[in-house]
Length: 126
Image (cartoon, rainbow, N blue to C red; front, side, top):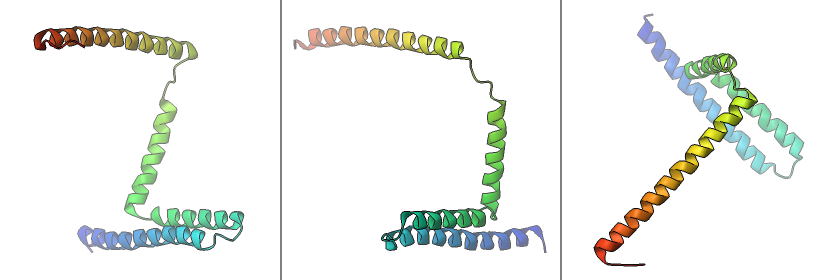
């Protein structure tokens, strides 16, 4: 088999797997509704089991594998982040608050001036 034939077969199987995943999740929702009179613990265990089974099936698809790889890479990148110290966080927050206050005063002043100019030009006073 060539690569395009293998990808096509894999794609059709992936579609079937995604249909099964959707049916399992829909079954979990419908089953939870139908068996509403049963114990919450039993329904919760059933729903969690259905979600785990659906996740396992979804992980067997190309998109599922790509999602798992992405999640692992994101976790690795998160571990590389250098988080700010408390002092840096407080200083940065202070700078943002001061800049926001300054810009709000500038915009308030500009709004007042433009309001007066438009009122003067149109002759309407409020």
